[in-house]
Image (cartoon, rainbow, N blue to C red; front, top):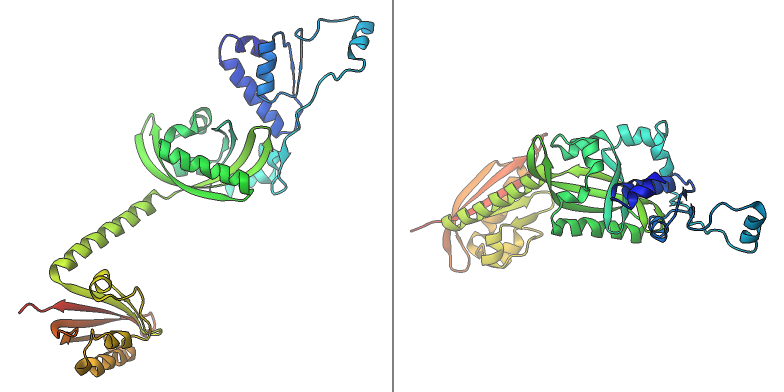
Amino acid sequence: MNFLAEQSDSNRGGTILSSIVRMAKWLCLPVIAEGVETVEQADFLRSIGCDCVQGFLYSRPLPEEKYEALISGNIVGAKIPQMELLDIMNACDFWNPKSQETLIFSNYVGGAAIFDYHNGKVEVLRVNKKYLQEIGMNLSEKELIEGDPMRFFDEHNKKIYLDMLERAMQSGEEEECETWRNIVSSCCGTERICIRSNVRMIGQSGGSTLFYGMIRNITAEKQQYADILESERRFKIASEQINIYYWEYTIATKEMRPCFRCMRDLGLPPLLTNYPEPAIERGIFPPEVADMYRDWHRQVAEGVEHLEAIIPLTPDRIPFRVRYTTEFDENGLPVKAYGSAALIVQ
């Protein structure tokens, strides 16, 4: 009754009631609200999934005979179906501190959380310490559970994350996404991080869905990838300036992977097999140097470390300085060769 009375004055009572009803459903407990006096209170309780309500709205206390007459032939109330838990996991055991699920959740999995998704909103119910470690920024369990977890997302990344939840609800399978988040901490300021999320639905009731989620902070991986792309961009610019073509040759399979300039200027595909024959057939290595170039690959296969010569390339016989450097495995056997052709300016 106190919560309902507070609900009429502020939002705090309603928030508490909503959380109690939702938690009770996850635990498969029936919920009866007493002290309902107004239609507005009854509508609110119905909206948050309360099973049964009782109070002056329906009747004042009655003598026994009048009560029996009132309920005779009538349906007193209708219960909302209890939580439907999926067979893959006993969601109730996540609230038991002694269960195997809790042991695994707390100690053996990575960053993990249990959260509720309803009416387009996400409410974190439980997180483990590794979850906090992945997020970083010295956030506490209290800060994550009490705050809106979607406050860290911009609109674009929020849509990506919510779309993943919708896919998981439709498929019943594990779904994954990567999102950027701006984590704000009272002690550490703001940091932008990239999180890979994996979620799986473990229960549903009415408009609420219970999820088990795992996260991994992949910010460092994203930065490394960005650094590689930047290095490749700079290398492409540099190679344009010095007129160098380069390629990678795998000795065992005779496969050649050309650089972007080889593909652009010479029309080569991303992979050539039975190399060097395709380059000879295309006239990149003219007939007068074809046998010498074939012999280079024989020498590389035998373990020659370096080869270098000035060779006229393409049908126009343009002179290039061609080099090969061989790479060896831990047993000293040749595995790859790296070739380059630099234009000789005359």
